[in-house]
Length: 382
Ligand code: BJ8
Image (cartoon, rainbow, N blue to C red; front, side):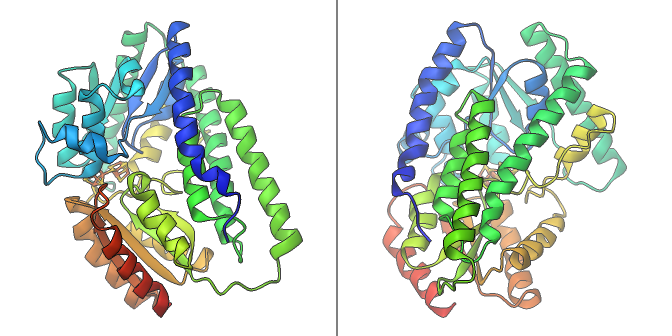
């Protein structure tokens, strides 16, 4: 169910406008922290009075630039992010006062060493698993260290009160984003998956957060009303797809848009471009550092071993969003997701009895035609 095509350009437009806003903010003395991952505790950055901004690369031009230093056979997200940094084409990187990295996959953590030669980089060391007592204690120490780094860098004190306030703010933002994504549970869906995905990814380049989230709430309300008025009780013959795997920001056109152009609806995203991190809120009643540690340790990324809760999430989403088929998108050379794909495939096919398609791709256009053929064949069997 496609809607409002002019919104398709919104992401690029918002990102470009954000360039000017970030420059203005810097001129007024604001502090910017560049982040790369869902494990980044936004609340600590908010409580330090700074602005977090995602530096994850999504374009193929910067991939080419990165290959002067990085191997060709490496994840495009890593190459694109690094290429943006060394080619000085990303104002967000340029204006970042501090870069926050995290020891997720090997490619990212080695890339941060190189970034450290051109910017002030702090790397949080993530536990490898979620269930041992010392996983929690280790990650808790990392939270405390990052808090100290922010305090020193920006000459501020992150009080308990500021942190509690930041936790409430970020929880509220998460709820608004999840409400928007849950439009995908409506059948027929009143919005395209492409619009859902671009809208949420664009919001990170809005620096007036109050205004941005109020607009998102309004858009959700508008679409729910549209569903009640025009769609409820009607039937769509478009199959409903769940996307899982790596972040899809760099392959949004060639995968998400293409699936929808071929006649299916992308209704759910179980990845970092979707609800993955947003569903679980930070406990507002606990000690704030404990609560942040607990929340961020429980992000179900394939870098964790084991990562069984991801299957639970996929299973619940298949039911809640009435999914007909699952497409797993793995970025080239992402070992953790590509290996975990075997388990995900078996779970989806055998336990949930749903068709599953594995796609491995990068940010280039070389495989667009081949993807078209494979996606078309998959949608036809649904
Ligand atoms: S929490 S998915 S944002 S690490 S960079 S792991 S695609 S090889 S992005 Fe990620 Fe954080 Fe996990 Fe989410 Fe693979 Fe590429 Fe590594 Fe990647």
